[in-house]
Length: 107
Image (cartoon, rainbow, N blue to C red):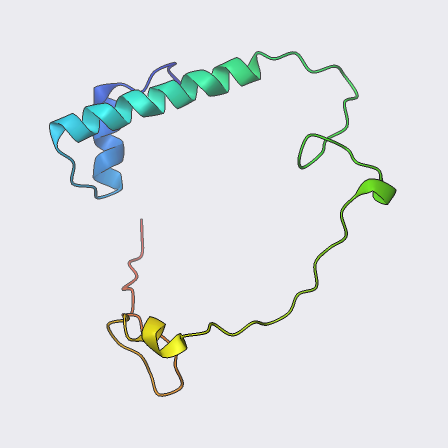
């Protein structure tokens, strides 16, 4: 893969994502993606010693120093009706109704 997202490649990605962008928006996003790609390459170049343990957050805290997990408990929203009133359509049970998404078989 090339080291830069070219205007041609970006145009193809925009087409696949079905985005409508002005030329200025497209160039801005392409530049930002290339900056992110550069940051990824810099991270890839960082030497990591063999045998470094994998952690999800980068700091392997011992079990006795970890914060306890919070209780998973339900808390009702204080003004449910006002929140649901913003939805285009709701059902009698208070669920938001969303339109069906048509599916196409890709070849």
